[in-house]
Amino acid sequence: MSNVETEPAELRCGATVDGGRAAGKTRPTALPGVEVLTAREVPLGGPRAMLVRRTLPQRSRTLIGAWCFADHYGPNDTATGGMSVPPHPHTGLQTVSWLFSGEIEHRDSLGSHALIRPGELNLMTGGHGIAHSEVSTGRVPVTHGVQLWVALPDAHRAAARNFEHYVPAAVRLDGAEIRVFLGSLAGDTSPVHTFTPLLGAEIILGPGATVELGVDASFEHGLLVDSGDVRVIDTLLRPAELGYVPDGTEVLALTNESDGAARAILLGGPPFGEEIVMWWNFVGRSHEEIARAREDWEASSDRFGVVQGYPGNRLPAPALPNATILPRSNPPRRRPAPER
Ligand code: MN
Image 1 (cartoon, helix red, strand yellow):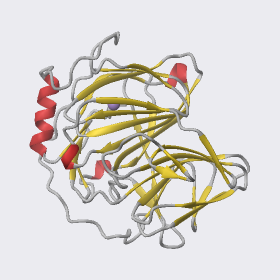
Image 2 (cartoon, helix red, strand yellow):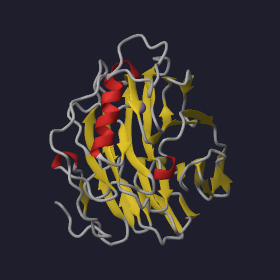
Image 3 (spheres, helix red, strand yellow):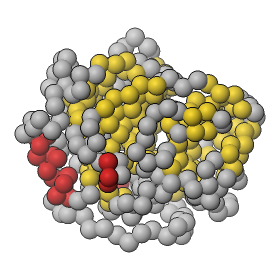
Image 4 (cartoon, helix red, strand yellow):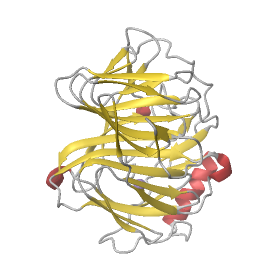
């Protein structure tokens, strides 16, 4: 997916996000430990104008491990709220497409032409540069899922273009059904290579179900709730909220406190430890790098290649913000005070 904001802010991540436009809100929690990040709604452009709920990056937290972007969308009627994103570029990141429902046709400048379906990982690496398009096929009436980005570490951020597909088995543990698409959880390990240690898994909990997940204590984690009310450790998360759990935690206890099934995405990784600059669909290390990537896209440089078979024009880059954003100091470990 593309970030199709018309005036995207340039964000320094790994510190705190600059610019109020990008700010989300945090909700006060009864007890410290789990930080609740609420989503801001961002309209995607194009004829179908789908609305997404963005929980990363935001003012109080920009990264969870190398996870640097989390959009949650749907359930939408595919006919009026499906996905229609023309060819657009990426640098310095990997995109993770994970659907709960729907069917999206992916084309990229490697020549990949794939259908993205529920329960199947599609991981695209756009290190030095890649371009892709994503369009709902219209064959499935409901479009519902997440789009996640992973920042590449400095040593690998010019990695070659790649597109990988993996279908994890469903693992049962206590009252949970778990699909591990990246990393290891609940005795299952994804074979998909990552450039930093990562965890990515879908967790479905029956009504009232509880699961205790042993996790790597060197990882920080984020639980993005899709549906149901899920208690993580001591904090209740509502749909579209992202609960952040700092590193040092060995067991994540999850309980579905709603009457129906609950579904969530668990993300994790060791604190990234590098400051990155994000703007539009690019991850870099400086404003100059981002500006160069934009220039290269606008000049149709070989850096990004060509997406074949998309029936329409590619997405033009928005204007760069005029001011170069200066980094801020690192935020405190825990959110100091509620913002509302
Ligand atoms: Mn994209």
